[in-house]
Image (tube, rainbow, N blue to C red; front, side, top):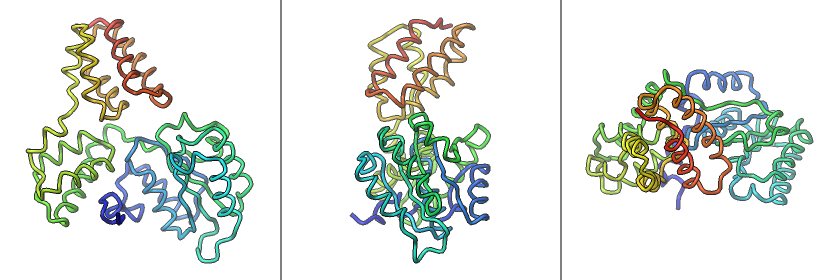
Length: 314
């Protein structure tokens, strides 16, 4: 399959200015470009927010010779990483104008402990010739010796900037669909963006899938109905465990961290005083565990069960 068939690749931003980012984060990368140099970086944030795109754009704009190793694929194997990293980092670039090569370790939080120790050693061994950019969804899965050798950039979006970022992405989506000759309903686009925010990659993938028929309209709304947190809270209040489990199963295609965040937003108005604090501690505990658990369904259900048992609803 050609890469340009996929919209996420065809419309991937090529420069930092093209990337849709909060102003403070974009300014950080502008400063790197102005200096003509980048440090070892750890880019952390939710899936699909643009970490890999930014890493590639930095390398392209600085005209660096770079390679990308996927931590969920070949990056999990010690010998593979050792060979690729050493062969690339130990040689000088004859074509690129940058002073340093760059190795991008994508999804670094999926690499093993041994691989991360090796990468820590590589940072030190090849510091004169090579820089490393790590991307991850969960920075707490990156070992401290590796974490401490990088400048950390968190792709977080605060409440004030959320609306502005969504509008920018909405405008870009409109241009993409118009360019592809796809008819669309703007209200449907807004709902899709709101549902998957800030996972822009998923929005583009979903839009491409829905666009096969040439139209994106209200007929597809049933396919991505929004998370019904109000329904969940009613079920929790009634201490209806089968109902809670049914809700969890029906929402498994959503990011569990996003589900817990929306639950947090909805509970504040429905719990009695002390129970609000208890719910916050429970949600924080299980949100932290998202990065480690083997079964997200069980983790989410355990969180909701604890809230149902321990908290007093109005």
